[in-house]
Amino acid sequence: LVVRAFAGIAFVEGDQIGERPGLHLIRRGRGQIGGDVRPLGDAVAAGFNAIKIAPFDGVYFGDADQAAFKRNTKLGIERVYAIREAVGPDIKVMVDCHWRFDEAATLDVLRELKGARLYWLECPVSENPDHYAALGRLRQQCHTEDLRLAGAERQIAVSGFAPFIESSLLDVV
Image 1 (cartoon, rainbow, N blue to C red):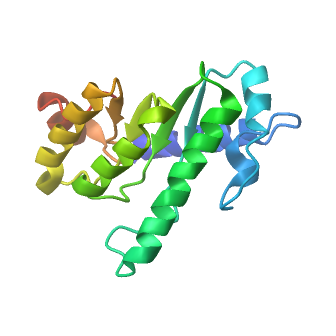
Image 2 (tube, rainbow, N blue to C red):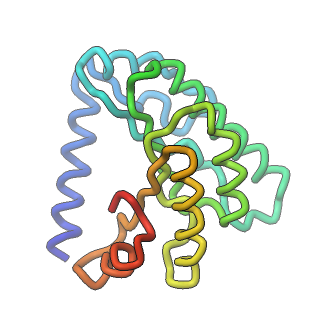
């Protein structure tokens, strides 16, 4: 409970930083398919050297409408490339997938995003024990592309993080 409280405080502080006058992080385009990425230049000018985005929040794993799944995945990929273009080649771009994919879809996304030169891919698949083997394989694939696999953001206490660290399932916890 204490860990979650501190995480909540950090989240609120991050939102307050993003709302400062003259410093528009990703907030302006949130929830829009064609959100304005120009304010990211403000973040770069303010000295930020990394941007974390969640471009796939319109994708729903297991969506019965496969056409919508593919369309929304494609839109997410387009968002990543638009952000890469907006921030330039020297800024680290970190993509949080919020568990929107299975292993096969994640591999497809990795192929599509190869030219975006991501710093990390976060939470592409479920992190329950049934998916540990997939996480291990995805981590290996990420390494072939000089990319880090991040996750475990919902874990608490040593027991929650231990499987990810002991089994080397993630690069960033």
